[in-house]
Length: 216
Length: 216
DNA sequence: CGGCCATTTGAAGCATGTCAAATATCGTGG
DNA sequence: CCACGATATTTGACATGCTTCAAATGGCCG
Image 1 (tube, rainbow over the protein chains, first blue to last red):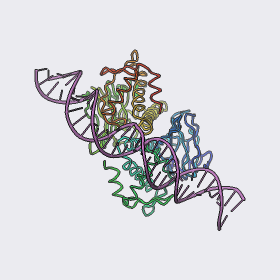
Image 2: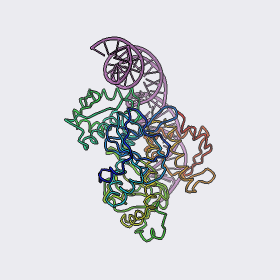
Image 3: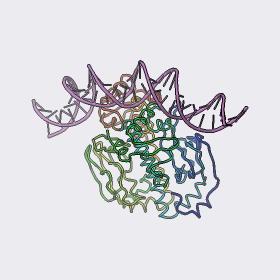
Image 4: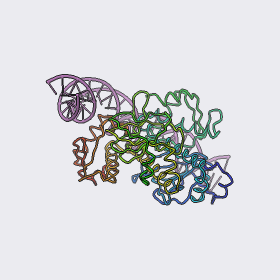
């Protein structure tokens, strides 16, 4: 999103942050005064329940923007937390600088809106996954989503992509248990659809995977 | 959202629509050229699967805006359909008129953003419902969400509110079957938390309902 | 009154959860 | 470079929440 005007962007940058896997990037329910872009690594937006249960809302890939909410609304409190999945490099910006840079002209405003709507689509797609698909369809669909997002970033080579998610992460994103995610991944491997050699995943049969994602 | 400048709004209004229960307001995947406000009645945003399964993304109550996506993005195709739940009265606007009215000044832009973020929160809350709550917690939570939204609109009297949802609607919102929704509502009634006399619902024990929504 | 639609209820099956233990993997320090 | 501990994956047996399918009941509107 924010890549539309590199010059002005660089001027607005405040700090560069590096975090390790599983570290908290931003706590839930605390006012945000920074916007971040994810330069390297994966992260996620996650709701924590008091008793330890987690629900991952969406995964964030390189180039994604975190805390976009801070741009239009002052002192917005995120209803979720942000966590690193891998090692992560973040660029931090002051929302005010960005709101000038991104909202000043019509064109930037549209880019911004398109980005937010894209994120909304992701979450809604996840809703349909959890609500109306069996475990195997949901897992297949999640892999496809990540595959296609990474392909757009040119991060897929020969149908092989980085896949740093633990089975626990997949479970928390899809409302399953790690045990069942394990069995489901096994089934996808047995079907010859994917091949996992951590931290890489290769899609062996793209159409088959798509079929599995839609069926039942 | 759009209520911030009644005069200009009235000037932008194009048509008033009336629809009956279950009628389609806007088909999925077709470009949108209108923005609507829901004047009377309930509606929902819903994903239809080829095989008949449905996933309701969110419920829309009086005062809500439909197709906000058309304001910043031309020819946006909704990834979901819009359906009336009750009799419905809609006011239609041309996006261009609104983008002037709502995006011209800083203040209106913020209102717009705040509204989109609110909708996003709803969907994300629903995600947590489906993913990490038992049926009873999810149903309790949904009732609470609607109760609180209606209360803000001053549409709750003596803890009684309109409740035009069929059990099938609840099921499609929460990823359950009608049979199980029925048993779950029965359980909530037996617990003395709610009382249903269609199309009304009375909350008998607000704290108890909240406890049920969080527990387990 | 009759037909349609929604709710209610039952019995049986299955997908997924739960709990626990064994195995594999990885990062780290010796 | 190896050994260790911590963490993640894999697997099993069993429990259960939810689904499926079907039929009965109830409410509403023409």
